[in-house]
Length: 220
Ligand code: SAM
Figure 1 (tube, rainbow, N blue to C red):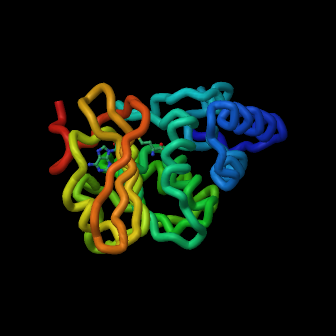
Figure 2 (cartoon, rainbow, N blue to C red):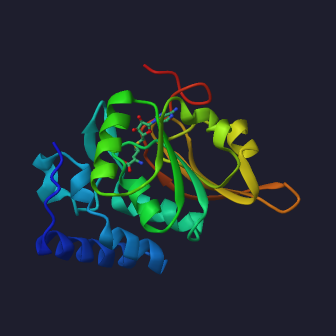
Figure 3 (cartoon, rainbow, N blue to C red):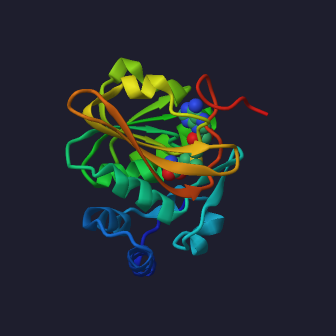
């Protein structure tokens, strides 16, 4: 059960979290402001409310996690998002990252493989009035019916960059995706320039749950 109670204590803890993210190197003001407003505790089981504003990943059930706030901030900053942009998120999970994107003014499409998590995120996002288009299914191949996207954000670790995601990326678009083995992935920023050429830039290593499905890992 999520807790939708919001008070000065939560706001204070969020402000401290955002200050920590700044000290860790996150500089984009709009990312920091969005993370200062989204109530992360509402996306977690109420048993974890006291820990919601620690810079840690937490279990959300179904063997999945809500990403560490620093990871959310890092990926979001790499997107260089502008209000009104059409964004695909792969791996809705708790819905928290989706809410951060919506809070930044993006038009968000988010897909989740696990039906229980999809349904739960739908309820939480709607209760908190974060409006996004939510889908349940294998997002490792993107969401071709709604392509192209100006930004694509993958929040699970992929074995490689799926070709279909490159195809669904708009000219001038950016894709942020962790790529590596099942335990450790390098954060990649993939850009499609005006001629349609693809460029990669690699950042730090992170540890995500695996991207499953057709262009992901096999379920074990
Ligand atoms: N963005 C989420 C949040 O804010 O809570 C955290 C995502 S969690 C680290 C990764 C999510 O990706 C899990 O919920 C998992 O079920 C989902 N996932 C894994 N493979 C997927 C696939 N092929 N398509 C869509 N979602 C997938």
